[in-house]
Image (cartoon, rainbow over all chains, first blue to last red; front, side, top):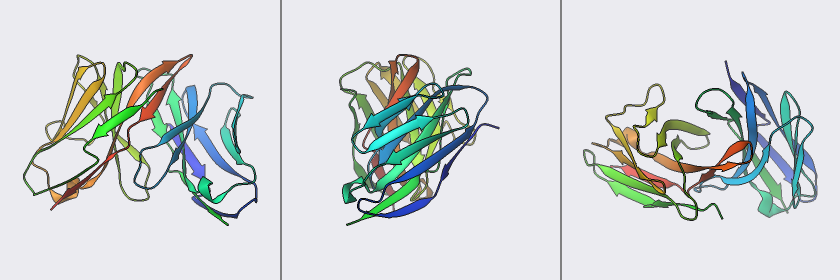
Length: 111
Length: 117
């Protein structure tokens, strides 16, 4: 069964305290892995797409990496404005290119 | 680029009425649009995949007669919740797919909060 699991469910950090969010996946075939940020009451905002193991993408304080089994979203020196829910999604390479979302990690950054 | 809009952002209606939600890709053409439902503090649940000019593909457990989807053009898809009931109250989010290299990246609308009294 295709599955995407994110951990931890929630993460509380002090401002400047770097950490990583995990997205592990078990799928029949990976076409792409996506990271999104979602603020309360809003739609997800696209952050990164990763295609192959070893690939890395960076944007400001965020860096996403990908292996054959999991992806990490590293947050360096986070600020309170980085507080949000971060969603991981895997697009399958089977018919229809279905996308499966993880449950998300709620990040709280305290000043 | 890759902006998706939804209208309305919030709707309150009486039980038994129908509600239409529009999803538009503003600066690109989307052959595929998706409709999701999200409950508080939960992730996105895919309801259906909509392709322009053809019938939507519904996920298991989603009533196609209750959630009518029309994908009339490459920039517009609509979701109509027919005879809405309080249990249909939720946050509905659409996304539009934009091919990007080897992947199809989904760009999301801002969501529509539906409250059925």
